[in-house]
Length: 242
Image 1: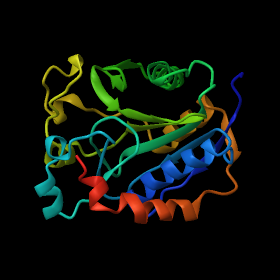
Image 2: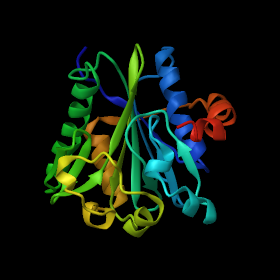
Image 3: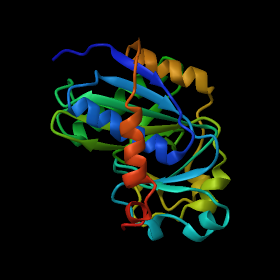
């Protein structure tokens, strides 16, 4: 199939559990043929730790500190490592068919998505590159991570873009990961992560233009999202399964 325009959804739900549940609900709708290709953008208002589907929580998260400060920890359905979300971090979620050009498999689709974002940022005079397989890097430091979940008919690519995040929160709530990309060179979070010099509104517009996502989504799977929250994302059995 040739590339086409995407639908667009700007929706941030009240809790991190609801936000990650909505991403899965959208993917399930797409798999059932009820959802067109979609770009969603959202933000968390307060600090929250979100871990990857395969993350080992005690290895990646300072669980005691999070619990002491009542910082929620949730496990998403996509891969990748632990991140801190909050003000200054724009989240984007792409739900695309498996037949989308250049996206035949995880490695190819990650490269396709991130290269498109780099090209769009270049038009804003920001020299951002892909490194570590799934990171966006600006001036040698990480400004975005990503992860995927693939199904038969489509896939969810979830990513972050940092534009004003308090890196001290990462120092507080995240451990230094055991598995690191080579370009990290053992750096602590505060020396490894930086911010894009751009406002959230411009980042959102950049994403919309890159993916031609201008048609609003007229309805979203609210009931399915709440079912997933109750059965999965609000359950300790899911969050602490590894």
